[in-house]
Image 1 (cartoon, rainbow, N blue to C red):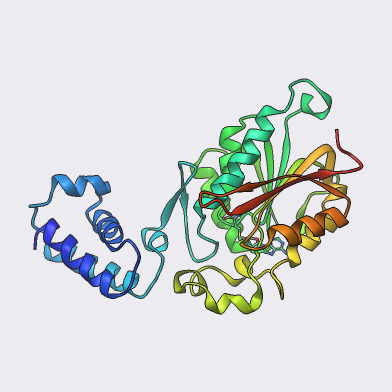
Image 2 (cartoon, rainbow, N blue to C red):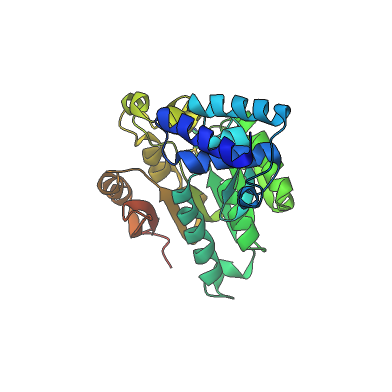
Length: 294
Ligand SMILES: C[S@@+](CC[C@H](N)C(=O)[O-])C[C@H]1O[C@@H](n2cnc3c(N)ncnc32)[C@H](O)[C@@H]1O
């Protein structure tokens, strides 16, 4: 079987399984087996596959056909252009979260130099770091920043540690395990608290795509009865950990913009803005404290 024939057969198989973008999936899996960049397949269409390559491809296709996420099968994904290892221990980073990371590093870099707390290196908290993707992207874009990355899952933190080391920013990312702010070292205060917390209502989890429902850890998805539980905690607890003039930036899900505004406003936050994602859906809340603003 040639590379081109394998791509066609695999695409047909994944189409029958009901996957979106079956050809892209088929090519990505075959490129992985052949240790080629995906575009390298196009230069090798006539190449004959060995028996071992056919069998390896078949196994990966079987897994993808059972709706195991492509990134999990490949063991890696790209986040803001940085390579992030993925396992079943943490949420697979999503494209919309790249906007949150970008909003964070843009704000940190744009702050007026030389004023107030900005004389010192910025200190950031990544609440619920998972793979470490947000912390790593901020650290890479803000070479002076120090980031505390916390998570309730020790296995996720191990993965975040590995990813931070691979992206050469481990010395500026302090990892700690614990339930929310309990993991923050005594006395540390932040210029920015950033989080993509679990925000799916418990009852909606069973309706998610199988790739998400069966493979992302429940602790990364479950936001309580109405999906807003962690936001209530963040609105109530973050204040004491913020430096004057600090910000909170949070990703949230569909339909949560209005309830979030209300939750934060009621807790004396000023909502500075809500950013939309690539599909024009409101996705990121940016807020500061009424009493420490400026
Ligand atoms: C939606 S995932 C986000 C992971 C990563 N930041 C990202 O954007 O891809 C939420 C993360 O919050 C963590 N988490 C959930 N509850 C937590 C808690 N009470 N304290 C600390 N971390 C928590 C989960 O383990 C998970 O890694």
